[in-house]
Image (cartoon, helix red, strand yellow):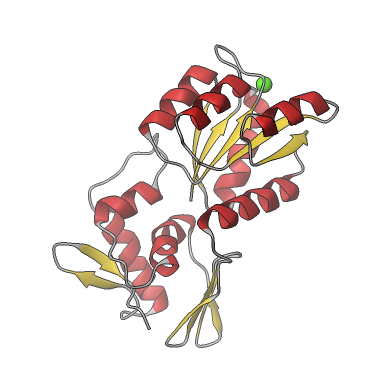
Length: 219
Ligand code: CA
């Protein structure tokens, strides 16, 4: 899951960034409205967390532009607790939901999950295959009843595969899920994480399709 965090307050931005990364989201953080617009034009996101008061170009203008361009990416706006008029303006401009600052982290995560689920049109069913159970909500994995700990990056590679069994993902597509743009991408990174996942989840779950990519077979 790839998130665009638009926040000009450094302290708030850093704490949200830490919290989202701990929850295994890939996050790009931009600090003004122009950078946010550029990001929405050059990348695709599963969700945009948008502060409304921003330098250079305010969040509402950005949001209206986004919707004018028919970009339906879920947008969660952040407003001050007493700023009812901002909230209404934001929802009218095409925001999907709002959260008030200061953030309650658990509420933020719950609202994000709900929006991502809604936009994906699915209730994130628990994945079960050949003794392997994976809960997309909690990222908890079990093999033959024993819990297996996955790293954030292993999860980033695994998540699209279990979400769509039978669909082949190229290495480049998985790489995109793996990193936010400031991280360096080594050429064999996806192979490394697939190797790690196979050690933890068994050799047969994720299959290579030679020259094309990776797939988890439909059961
Ligand atoms: Ca602000």
